[in-house]
Image 1 (spheres, rainbow, N blue to C red):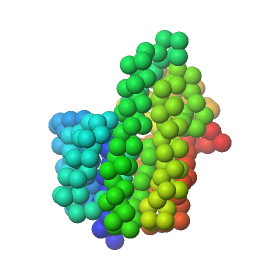
Image 2: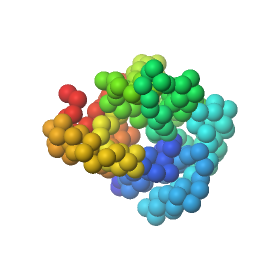
Image 3: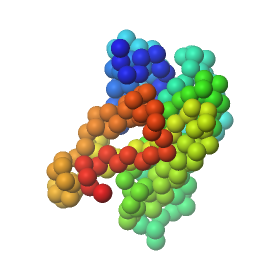
Image 4: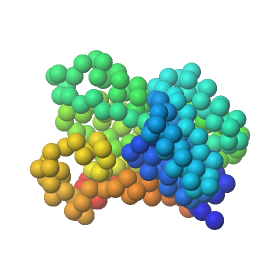
Length: 248
């Protein structure tokens, strides 16, 4: 028996990266997994097959997480296809970095819409389902920059700080209904996004991390699994930093 056997998880933006690692770990622990991405292309279909290989039900849905009406449709479809939604991971996210003086309105709007509004959209659509089930676990993928800020990322940091406050507020609103909400704040994680950084920048990062290494997507997926499972049944409204001790 896996930690998540019999549960259905919905993970947004999960065709690759951290979202994909979470979806695969959930499947390994016995969860049925529905996931969304802007398009379900070859990599999305490959992810679907990788999840299904664990012997669970898996399905990818093309959906723009920033679109309120589309999100409601896709959540209702997932509920119809899977029967329940026990775990929601708000992972869909983008960056459009730039210093405030040079940031365009479009850069700001896009990041707030995809990162923060999408989390509102999915929580809004999933909470009525979770209320009827008398339980559920909501996990917002924030970031250490949402806790500490970061020069050149005011839009991204603001969106991630928003996701933290959103999780804490939902934890307060929905606790009596058995719904938990927490945020995960990854630090320097080895993904395609960070692989694009120059070697000297990466080395400099690692020097600042007490554990002296970047995190893996599995490191993040493991904490997500804990928060999704009944092992964390008395944990809600929390922010867990997965950063190797970089920001204590």
